[in-house]
Length: 351
Length: 269
Image (tube, rainbow over the protein chains, first blue to last red):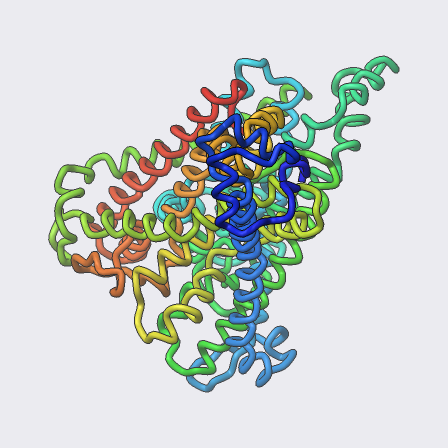
């Protein structure tokens, strides 16, 4: 309320009187009314007070829709998943049996698959995104900064299903013929259990790679904004002490921005955890925990996307809802932490 | 080391270029006038189009906008006008959290809330799910844009005797309209490509349907169905669909970019 004088147009008289105010412009004691007289075409102040109330109330209603929506999602999904969570208890999270026919449900492989693919995505995307962000905020010539930022941001605009389509017909064959044999045989990583086994294509690794491409723009955008928000003095002080440009960046700028950058990475994690379509199309959809990244797997999101339409028994639907609820909880926590970290940096980020 | 960051920046753009180039190569052949005006052909027959899916996607976007825009813009105005209050901070934080909600969770929620009780998949449920995804995006951009309106402009309007609500709607909102339109376009571009929230709500439809009370076809759903099918004809159609979808999304995104740029000099976020 920056202008209390306009709100305090006297005690509200009856509507009839208020109409009289506007037309005749009496009551010189009230400064608000004098002003009203100057702009006679406007509605009465008193009518405005009511309209203002209604308007403010409407805005408040819309604003409250946001928490209400979140709450209803939380309660509805939780309620729908409750029978499964209640029946299987902690075993739901820790066991691997997923047998809709026998009514046995353990979501461990999907949970592990979700965490694993997201981890691969972050390991692959973070260095690249951070490097790109440093280039954009520190070294890029001015004419290149805008277009390059825009191109990287565009990566976030490509629909998930298009990534999936591309991955099925481009990335998977490439994995089968080049990337997987290269990792396994040329680099001899096949000796470890993590890169062993036949190179089919659809795999946890492929899902991690497509996720890396998808979260890269988020991490890059947040890191760029956070780096740009670092005060000039921070750079100049380091340079004045005799640091090279690179030393100033690694010694003064990046450490200053590290909370925000970490927030960006966690925001990327939140995206990766919940990503559905592209992952469903390339992960191979097998309910099994395997040490090898070459093996097919499942994520929570792809499990729901793949089985939900075919679920017929109540407990099967409830189990999928419970998986959704676990995913919801994890992403809510991850996002809350990320937002808190980024906002502490004072950067203006809307990724 | 400067070179290393330069290489990183280049590598970050490579996937976009590769994806777009591959998409052009695969999809260009299958996109024709028929694609926009014809219905899908049965398996084994080449050609046909996705007229129903294109119209379906437009209808779904319309429902989503009708549902998501008033709430999103209203909430954004509230956030901008009540900056710093505890409730505004909470709503802003929750909007950001809602923005990070996995789309598949939105899908099963909409199924549980809007499909299960009525016993059938509907366009309305799909549109509502997409609309809910628009709310946080639109409210955050609206807030940012309304904040850029100079305080003096508000004060001038109020000094002229404008009531608050008219100041808010006719002066503040109108001044920041360009930015808000950008935010709306970005939100539309995002939900236009969403598949997961539609899987169990709009469901898809191989026939022509514009009824809001029936399952409806959508471009992303159709692409998904065709992509995971074993038929070459359908794969070609999936590529064409993807090209049309990404064309739609990119045109909206680029338009949004230029609307912002002309309004705010430096342009964009």
